[in-house]
Image (cartoon, rainbow over the protein chains, first blue to last red):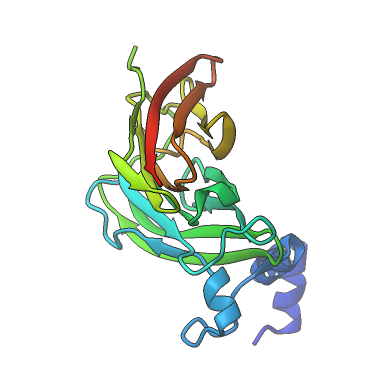
Amino acid sequence: MINRRTFIKLVGAGGILTLFSVPARLVAEGIQRPKDPSNLSDFERIHTPVVRAPKLPQDGRFVPFRVELPEHPMDEDHYIKSIEIIDPQSVVKEKGIFSLTPALGRATVSTRLKMADGKHAVRVIAECSKHGKWETVFHLSAVGGQCKEN
Amino acid sequence: MNQTTPELALPEKVKKGDTVEVKVRINHAMKSQEYLQKLMVYYGGTLVFQYAMTPGVSDDPRVSFFLKAARSSEVKAVFIDNKGRKFEAVKTLHVEN
């Protein structure tokens, strides 16, 4: 529970933005997440990106990272347009954006990423041509890492 | 200088309508001073896939994606680095009806 004095301090320090930044950001960016990740509806299941990556990568210089939306159609009028990977815990947060087309037939991409030592909550955002942006957050803990300016 | 021609890996023969995995690799540094900015892949001359890259991607990038085999045609992968240099690889996807 936040008392009045703490609340005023938080507002003064800009902390209120931090307190409420995640849902506010998701709304501002128009990003959707499953209501209950352990019990997805059919609609949520086809739109939510699935990440295949090691939870404890042993070499943070080369972390294999695969993103799939295996059940989503890739039709001319309904397909996955893009997949974006963001790692807020890395110096280089933007890990790239894949732009897809219906010609691919399947929305699955893979790459290798640099991850600094420590815990990461990697955001993966897929954009459907009809139903907007959907986010998954993948947690991993890297060692031997590398993601710094050099 | 740490760079080379990209390699493009495709299945030998596929049937029309199959969805096949395409793998692209290149030996190139991914440092803030020198990095690949973009991978573009064309199938039969049409741009079908792009990857906007950053120095947050590992050195010597390995990228894969899927492609629906519609016809026998060239697949061309083009990397562009932050200095404007292009690195290309071309292979033919052989599709059986």
